[in-house]
Image (cartoon, rainbow, N blue to C red; front, side, top):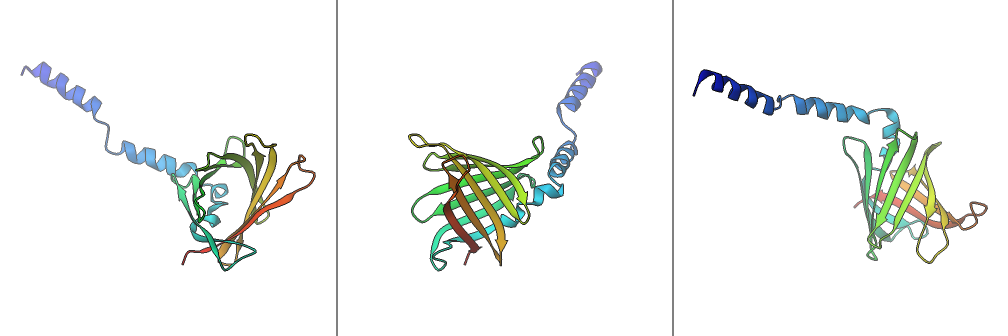
Length: 176
C-alpha cells in the first residue's frame, strides 16, 4: 500500500472509532441530570411490597415492586393485583414544568395522567380520569410513609372537585 493511502486509511479509522472515555462522560452527565434533592422526593415508595386493603389489613390483595430507574430520573411501579389487574406507573419530576408527573397504564387499556408534588410529608398527584362511556372524574392520590411501609389513598370527584368520594386506601408493607 502506498504511504499516502496508509495515512488516509489510518485517519479515517481514527475518525470512525469514538474515544473510549466518550461514553463515560455521557453516562456521568446523565447521572447528574437527576441528582438534585427534588428528584429523590418519591424514592420513599421504592421497595418490594405486599399490598393490603386498609379495611382488611391481614389479606394481601396485590404485589407491588417499585424501583428507581434511568439513572435516578424515574420511579417505576409494577403493580399486580390478585384478580388479574396489572398496572405500571412511571413517575418523574418534570423540571421544565416544575411538577411531578405520573403516567399510569394497565392491562385493561387504561391510561391516567397525573401531576402534583410534595405537600408536607405526602406525594400528591391529581388528574382527570377519562373512560369511554363514563363521565370524566377528577382523581387525587396521595402516598406517605407509614411505619416501615407506605400508604396510598385515592379519592374521586364527579362534580369538578366540589365533593370527593373515597376510591381506595392501600397499605404497602415489605414483601414477606
